[in-house]
Length: 78
Length: 78
Image (cartoon, rainbow over the protein chains, first blue to last red):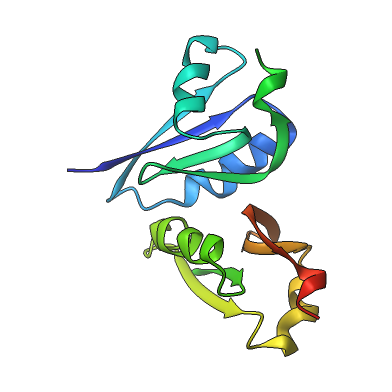
């Protein structure tokens, strides 16, 4: 069974670059990558915060938050 | 031909977590992942800087630097 990797972003240029390069580079044999745009899916902000996400873009892998460069703080999104 | 992805780290706990989770999650069909310990391979600091790496852990993918969380500034390494 594949592991879910969640990529949180907010549509910013830094986010798009990270999605195209890092999220897209994950092994599709092992991971289902879910992409969440927190600017459009604000209902998932609490889920992101619960996973330890403090800024976007971020990838949650194995239950751990990995912030990739810095686009925007989560506090700027709501 | 596979693309080279370079993971720069300095042996710190944040680095090790990123290596185990993110660098290890890359698609082995598409990427050759090189792991560089900048504390032990200081001769590669210039190469890391040239790629835009400012802190470790960082992954250079597609010629772009992706800083993953924050372990140490490159300036602390030499």
